[in-house]
Image (cartoon, rainbow over all chains, first blue to last red; front, side):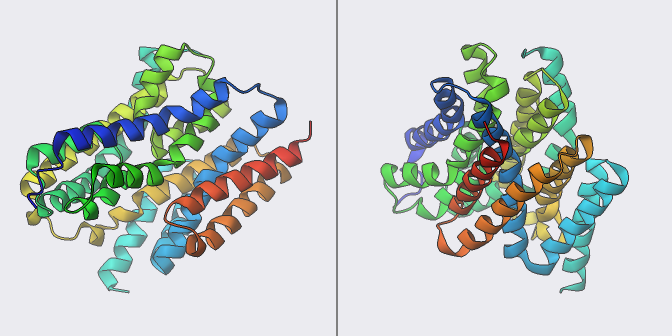
Length: 101
Length: 229
């Protein structure tokens, strides 16, 4: 099948789907009464998402990604600079690739 | 809460370096899409309209035999995390006008979510930064996709430069940024451990991406329980 057949209409449908997920959380919350506990839950959820992403990536990527995360964490704690952290993580990952571990 | 151009600029600047280094990811998508037989213009349009690496990469293997419905369902499945991100930002975002909110959320993504939520917890009140950060990411994603679609094969495997560790390093930094700004003691440790545990267990038991959703819900639930009334 010619791969251009799905085409622009399909892409538009995909785009609309993703857009709906982007606004759904906020729209849902605007219809629910906010309590202090609910707000605490939402804010904790924010941190939890990032923890989950990082942990999953370490599990999937093994030593290379895990050490990159450790390096990023170390630099962030030492310098409070996210760019230093990113550089450290990328450098460690690149070193692993270079040494073909 | 407000949403101003000044905030937009702050957010744009804040994420501009990350965005530049994310261009290789866009290149990877553009090259992969064209390799699947997708016309260059459609590949670029997809990145501009969908603006989601996860959804776009997930849809690629289905491109030949998939129906519109199956493509939409795959995109929906990998995008459910956005619902959580939007809900997590709602304590702040729902204070601005609905029109601005619905427009600004169009560029919601993990990195600008991470940057904005950390900023809002520090006391920043301009939601423009979410949009500005998203704009930087969008520009880099579309630019990278265009380069990849047109000239992909020339680059080879970009992972040898460690670029694939960029996002996870940034997220690590954002997690710690919260702690450094306002150490909340036991209130953050238990939910974080819960989220980590659920994420790991779910990685093998649940379909791709759903372990993140489950982990976020579990961490949030623990945070709500600890908080008390």
